[in-house]
Image (cartoon, rainbow, N blue to C red):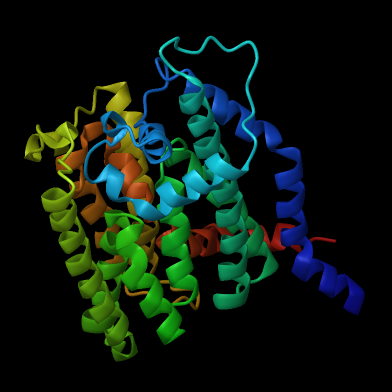
Length: 345
């Protein structure tokens, strides 16, 4: 019986390892799609890697993309250390040279590693930090796979998810969490846009004063971020990307008759709000530490679409899924009696 209990505790981790082994084609498909970017449009971080490698300022790119240093450094390390895999039977744009192809390979590989690192971290967070049962652990892994499909697989979205989740894992370890929060300005602005408001809710609405030092750290990282942008603009002639030229509130108005808006924005935003709507109706917390005010987090990310465009609204909101995933999984487990199915002999 004891052996069976020990196996039950580690079987989700075994499942993750098996998924990693058998899912190598996930990387290959992502790599192929990135090279066929005429059909799968995304932002080319590869150009910045070419700039790092050649020094050609024509590839230096613009802010804020070229200030997301952690992802760029990780990608560059892979670019320089891992042998580049060339795909066959792929009609690559003739304007792409070997540098671009290998930079694409490094970005695809980084995203593949990050995807399964997120799964492992979700397992650790659910089992060790939140101390949920095996049924909720396996549900968390399943739904994490699903919700990651709403996150851009070709850029640094997965890194933002991983880093934000890492902060949540160590949130009760003051010095580790403060260090992670302060350094988050090197990852991207979305990290602090999630963690900062979350800490505000915990301190000022849930009265969890112990997180005040982490909240101060989130304020500092905002300051550091703007100082970094100012420094890069004035000393390296970095410019703001033209993608933000048409920024405005008009980007937040959606057409419910447009299938693209429905799939890319409306439904993902609804998915993000659903766990909190269920909570407000049922008033069940399932032993989790949250207030309900966290419903504002996906809404705040939705308003980030002022700069990013209406087709990114759902993607931005979905960056918060790691915050509400434990609640959603507990609700699924409770209302659909998944635990009874799990424990059925």
